[in-house]
Image 1 (cartoon, rainbow over the protein chains, first blue to last red):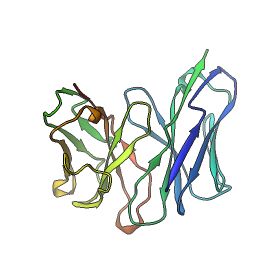
Image 2 (cartoon, each protein chain N blue to C red; image 1 turned 135 degrees about the vertical axis):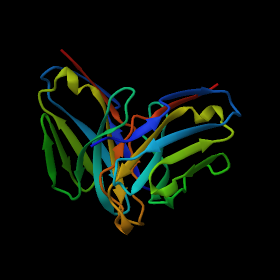
Image 3 (cartoon, rainbow over the protein chains, first blue to last red; image 1 turned 60 degrees about the vertical axis):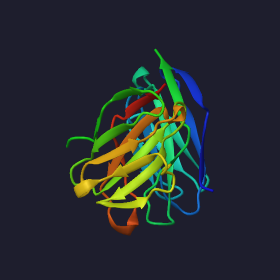
Length: 112
Length: 117
């Protein structure tokens, strides 16, 4: 069964304190791994798509990496506005469905 | 480019009542998804449409949930009768990808928060 597990569930950082969020996955053939940001009361906002092991993508203070079993979202020198829940999702290669299988998310709080 | 629109944003109903949610996807996006997000969990797919047709409804509780996408644009999701465990945020998403390739980034609306009392 396709599955996504994120850790930690919650993370508190001081402004400027870099860290990483983990996304472990099992999927019957990976079509893509997606990272989303979700603010309270809003829908998930697309951040990155990774397709193959070794791929990396960056956006401002965020950098996403992918291996065959997990993905990391590295946050460098975070600011309070980076506080949000970060969701990881995988899309399986089998079938013609675009279904995303999400993890439970990591809630990040950055204190000034 | 306008994002995915959903209404209402909030709804409170009693159990056994019915409720409907509306979604307007991003213009030109052929694929539309409805997800259910229970508090503290990630979204779970309920149904996927490609144009007018259903691609995946394997996790839709068909005894109480129904959805339609007329003319390949707007979509409605209905619950009848509602149960307490249906309390959740219902998210609509759309993507540009068509055909059997699936895939592609999905863009989400703000969601409808449903409370069943």
